[in-house]
Length: 204
Ligand SMILES: [Zn+2]
Image 1 (cartoon, rainbow, N blue to C red):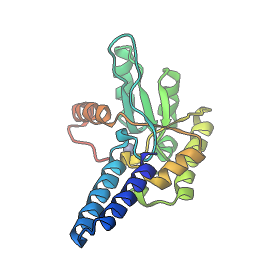
Image 2 (cartoon, helix red, strand yellow):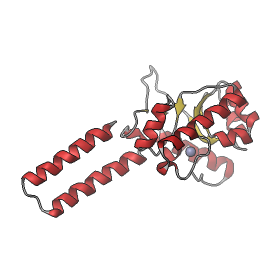
Image 3 (tube, rainbow, N blue to C red):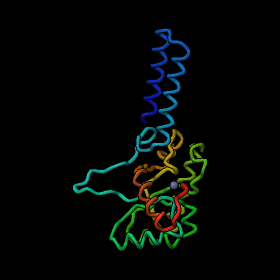
Image 4 (tube, rainbow, N blue to C red):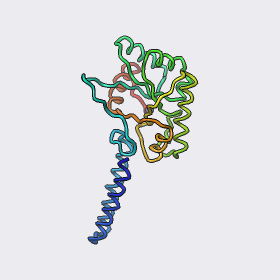
């Protein structure tokens, strides 16, 4: 939680400005810098600003972790075929609602030995504005669907849009999840692969 340390630092800056009789513009500048860092921290989960996230792991050989978000969808079987052909295992961050729509595909992900992570129940556009309890509900509901459909429990969680804030951080703690980042890998590969299969760019 770098956020709380940064708040302390911000308060210290204000005391410093007060001591040296800084003008209103110095306060304003300080506040703008503070806001910029908080916004940056909200959108870049890899920074670990609000939540500690898994971003990398030391391995003996050079390798990359392949992850897919927002499924299962009608295109997931094509990804699964491709992964099977190349004997590659990936991690799928699934949405509860999508699992309800494509239960067989979800089962296939598990059966073929891929890892599964929680990507909330509805992938709400309001994710950044939800209360802690609403956010925890989103995570728990997705867990329930996973358990009912695939008899699976996961500790992995990736926030929709990679957004984190104090409420989301609390919800992750409440539900006992480990947050995962790796968004750059996610975006480049997904862009390439989805463009290949659908001819269009992904939405979220
Ligand atoms: Zn997503």
